[in-house]
Image 1: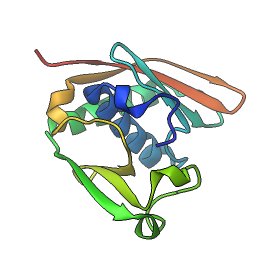
Image 2: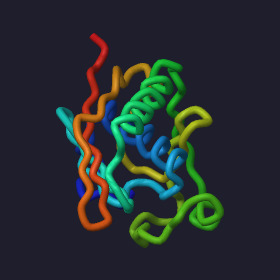
Image 3: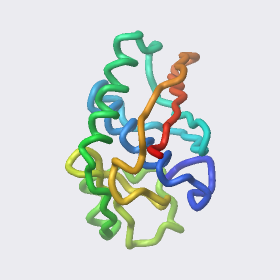
Image 4: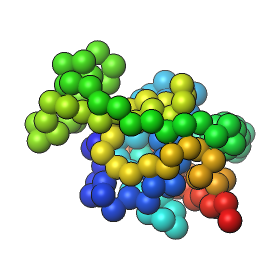
Length: 152
C-alpha cells in the first residue's frame, strides 16, 4: 500500500524482497518502512525518512540479514483483517478509503508483516539472492537501490 506504481504490475520475487528490506530497515534503525517504492524486475528502490547515508558496514549487514531470511525458506502467507483490527497493528495514515474494510496482510514467516495489495512468492527461497546496488542521502531521504538474482 502507498506505493507509486500499480501493485498489480509488481514482479512477485522483487516485491517480496522489498518486504524483507523494509522489515530489516525498520528493525535495524527503528524509522519505519519506506514511504515510497518503485519496484521493477531488473532493479528497485525504496525511500526512507532518514538523517544520513548508510555506511558500507550497514549495507553489508542489511544484505546479510535479507539473504539469511531468503535462505530460511520462510513461508509468505496472505491473510485478511478488518480496518478496525488493522489499526492496532499498522499505521493506516496513508491507507485510502477505497481499500475498503477488509484489508490484505502479507506475513513473511515471523519476520515481517504488513498491509499489501501486490503479488508475492509462496516462500522466500523463490526470491534468489539480494544485493544493494547503491544508496544516497539527500534532504532527509535515504534512497536504497537493490537487485535480486533469481535462482535458476
